Length: 223
Image (cartoon, rainbow, N blue to C red):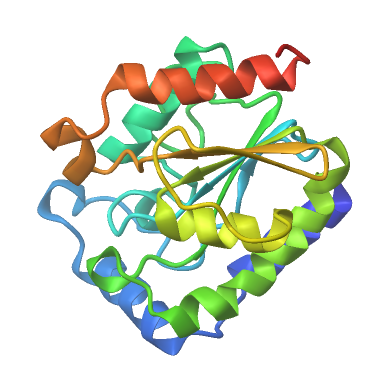
């Protein structure tokens, strides 16, 4: 547990990507009108959940007015509503929402992280930024690997990042529902629960529930 806590502290203090640090601070200063009375986190966001997870979820990056505001992964925006709602439906989250760090949310066997720990402009980190932040993903993968049974990548960037730290051999092409085995860990792909995907119907609740439900079963030793 101490090692994970130390990693999270180090991530919060990271300043490797000046463009992202400046953007996070700018968003925290300017704020969205509906959150003008709130104090934004405004910096790198650490992982959230179990320190000995059976399921490790990797997203793209914090949302500018979601995790960059609340300081917790997938918390405070519609993407988080979709993810935690699905986790709750399949029995992996205590409550069906994640609004702020003190809302009582708890993940018993799940940990959520991201390929990039700072909110990027237009939700598009550069390849160099993904590479730099990849050192944190590598470190976290080493810490969670002993208990891990399932890795879930939300989107193609997360799939590439997760495969780099957990996969072996040629990386399978990303797609929703893609499944691969590596070193005793099952790796699953899902479309990201972004508004672009959920509003257009590219990702439905049923589709997300199926991936997370599969992960829940695998984590309990079910086929």
